[in-house]
Image (tube, rainbow, N blue to C red; front, side, top):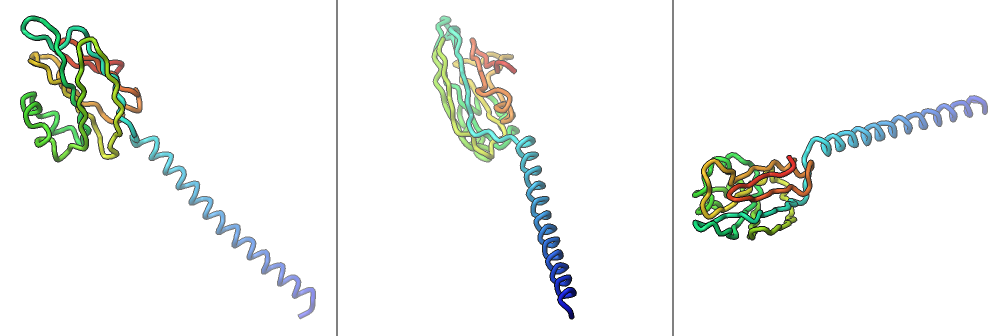
Length: 177
């Protein structure tokens, strides 16, 4: 083999090596881009909320006794895997045995004592497995036809952070929805 043929063979081998390296690198880039697109889609379409932030406002007329005097009350927040059991429980069940009845779905709880005319802000870590937050206002006497229990989807915190809840008379109201 003469020098010219050897040089041509070396150039051909080098060119093949460069093409093979470029093709392999291209596959890696394509994989990285594909992974990036998948991760971006997961970020957009899944709800990742790290903190359950709530602004709670109690009106001056709150949880009145028989004489019309406003009294403090407890508002309890439940981080839940699923809302089905919570939605089916009545006031007395939640007041007397909530932790036991919700144990299959319950991830965390937080109690807030709300005074008439006062506000409270809470910021609690949101469990990654929580899908909803259940809220119960334990009024002295719940009034028929008034809202004393709320189910707030986790995705609500992506729209409004903090979530605002007002407690007036004997009713819970989700504000700004």
